[in-house]
Length: 111
Image (tube, rainbow, N blue to C red):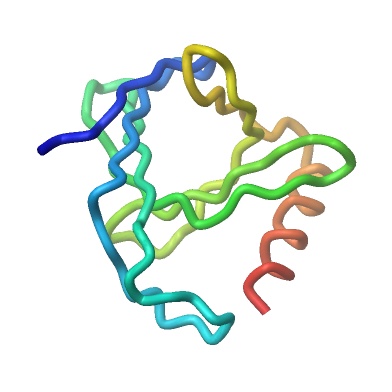
């Protein structure tokens, strides 16, 4: 059974959520190894899809952000994030200062 949902956002990417996968994250923060891994699929400008695990959503100064880990990659992607009736909306982080603050907040979640 496929429970994927496809969403569009204003960042010119399409996103799908997959709620059927499980993972063992290996973290020491009390994660249950049977937790579902939530995935989002970004459609890139060349039409290819990039599967990303949603690592976290978090708030800084009343603005939501999301951390994504593309499968088979080591770099985490950080975006502005909000939910709409049509699905998630991702937005680019526009300034170096904002990116620094978001990066630090995400890293503090990983401690």
